[in-house]
Image 1 (cartoon, helix red, strand yellow):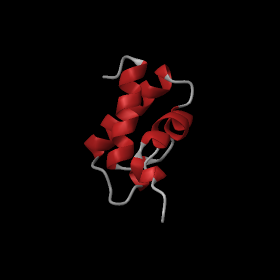
Image 2 (cartoon, rainbow, N blue to C red):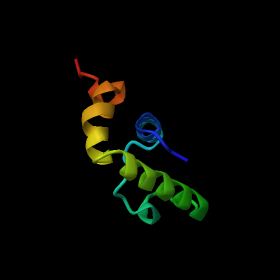
Image 3 (cartoon, rainbow, N blue to C red):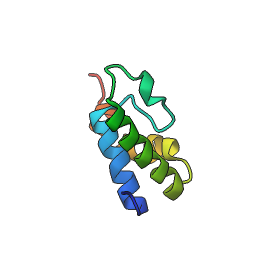
Image 4 (tube, one colour):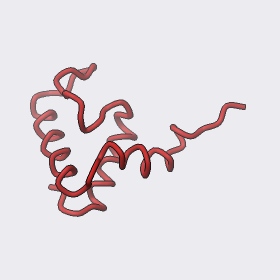
Length: 77
């Protein structure tokens, strides 16, 4: 259970590291490779908790999380 803003940011950060193209607004039943029903329930519940703690979790991903992640900021030489 996510109960603090810091926990929400950590959860979103972990999701970005593991599943960079999965976002809180996605229909998790349409992700490929698919999640199990149990995983979908868990993730939906956690994303709902993030929405209760953060004004806009998607914006948090784009403005606070991804700018700090090398995989989204590596420069091509």
